Image (cartoon, rainbow, N blue to C red; front, side):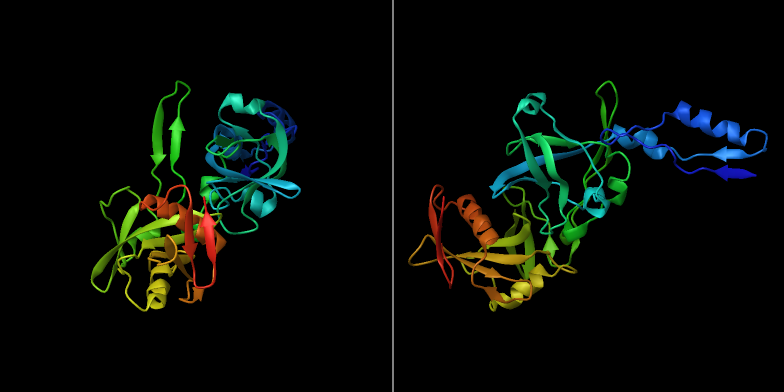
Length: 308
């Protein structure tokens, strides 16, 4: 007869006091001795939990009234445990010098536009800066296996590092599903992050951009490459199931009064008056296509904005 005790051996996430393997054995074996049982245990998390970290980079730090947000490029699709059941994972700067920075209470949040997209809330930690690399600890178990492609985000690549510093890639980062859709084909276009969408027999270069949680398809439409009606094109391109997939379409167009005109379309094809996150993306995109780099003025059918 076999008795399966399951896991039973916890790991230290923060300051917990857990049993060692020897302590666990001393407590269990005397109770089972003489019963003729074959004993099975499942110590997977005990073995690998604290052997793995999730590496994430700080996109920017956003001070707000009564709270500071640290926005990173990993989200709840990469590590769901904090959002799903409040699990605690220590977060430390990879650069040891940054660990001496002044400590602040912060929320470490991801780029997904969800209130539950966080890795830590009200956490006292050294305040990082944009570009810093952070290590989310104790991610070796129930991390990648519980990750997903939610919001069309590709899952992280896995790397195995030996004690001597040798490194092997365990799993390559999957290609986003929207790159496999029928309206999207790979291109050797400049900058490396521009793909090509096919519409009406033509190829239209676009850039996928993210602004504070929203992802956009951004197109330079100063030459009128997007077929009219643009609303129908937007609904087709932004569809989550069978297209490029995005929260909206941003078009950069010519303007007689300003540096350029911004048009923003929702996923249903409706044209919005204005979008703050879209404005940030279109300002960055304007610099990429050679428009004024320091200050630019844009116009929508509702408002005018100036961004530096």
